[in-house]
Length: 159
Image 1 (cartoon, helix red, strand yellow):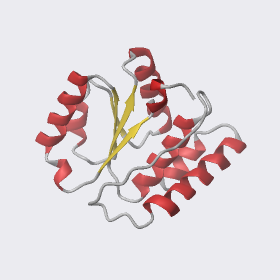
Image 2 (cartoon, rainbow, N blue to C red; image 1 turned 135 degrees about the horizontal axis):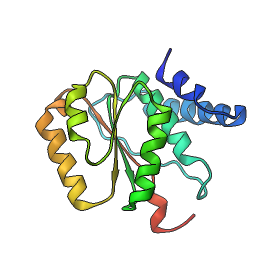
Image 3 (cartoon, rainbow, N blue to C red; image 1 turned 90 degrees about the vertical axis):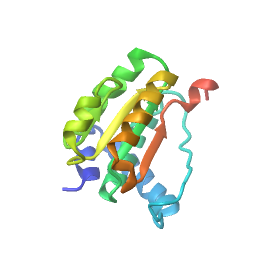
């Protein structure tokens, strides 16, 4: 079973499942279908506040893992409650991934890239620097692209 299929099975509502598959298919066909795994690629997923963007982003992460992306950084606002909420949701949605929070560098190291990794971080300078150093020192980025998602870019200006 693919990572995307596994993620979609965790979604309760059929309408949401279809939306995730449609958005993910669209993003990969238009944006990442010919990605060379060395270049930089930017994209933007727009939606109203509380419209289900995180669920769509999870679909994109799962589909990217199916296409050999292995390291994901998911950025939230500098709000502990929101970061923890996203972390718990990722744990429920991705049982075959290594899900790391800001203090999970040991979990990251112990995974040894056996499973795809999602690192869920607050946009906080000290935390981001810590994980930048962790990733550089691990050597894992020498062979793999890094997929960065800012799940709270809308926090600067609602809607």
